[in-house]
Image (cartoon, rainbow, N blue to C red; front, side):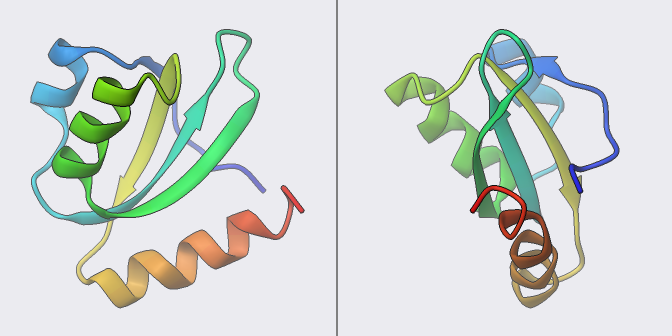
Length: 81
């Protein structure tokens, strides 16, 4: 099951709106197909993804802890395998 969030273009403006806290994110291609699921401090992770050109679009969910983010990401990764 994908994150039930709207896709946003992966750019500096979007990253500026991302919370600086733990969470899970999905990167997608221009068509909205999920290409990667990751966890960590959202703003830091997405800055890196933008720098390396890892995706065109992004959606995320903030969590209270990194452990919660990893658990949620595990649920979503199952569908990509």
